Image (cartoon, rainbow, N blue to C red):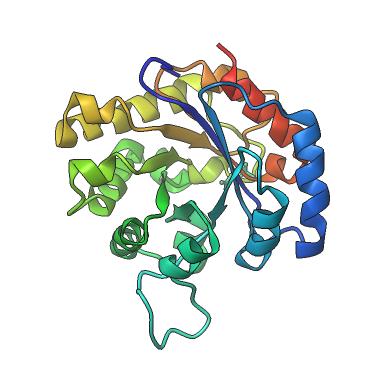
Length: 257
Ligand code: PGA
């Protein structure tokens, strides 16, 4: 990563794991392992029902809390949904938008993702916008086209000032939860491609300040190599973030010079 322009960010996506009653112990164990390095940010994204417990457990620490999803609507008759305003009111700072599991299992389209992105910004939440190609798209040789389409559709109507609030996460779908990581060169070049698109749209001073994270089977074994790539500014960590010890180690790896 290029620390001259960007902070390192490591976000943990717990997915549908952990109980509210387990969170205090997780926070203690993570705090015991982790001395947050300078210019490094850690975000924990628990399931919505665990958010109040996570906010309490991490209060007074430098770890911020994010959500895994939110509604594209502000309020109203949307049974079971949670709005950005409700998350922000709790004290949540960030929200994952467009994770591939939501795109695949809950049929979120590029257009829905774009609406959610705008709703998150309107609610003063920092979006972590996930994009990435499937194995099929990769095999067809259209990975960069797919990434560009997802990114450009999500960012339609987003101005430079709003862009400065957004974190982008490149998560190749074939690498998520599979133990198969993109090589650091592959991931680095995809992230460089993403930054080039941001530069075309918003200019260099904006593009060089946007954090771009890698996600997909990120572990303590591959973290340092991935974080050494100039356009990878940290990670979105799934499985490994369920262990407070491993997550702390990955956060510290991101902070190393
Ligand atoms: P993984 O998940 O680290 O378990 O592959 C990453 C993610 O889905 O954000």
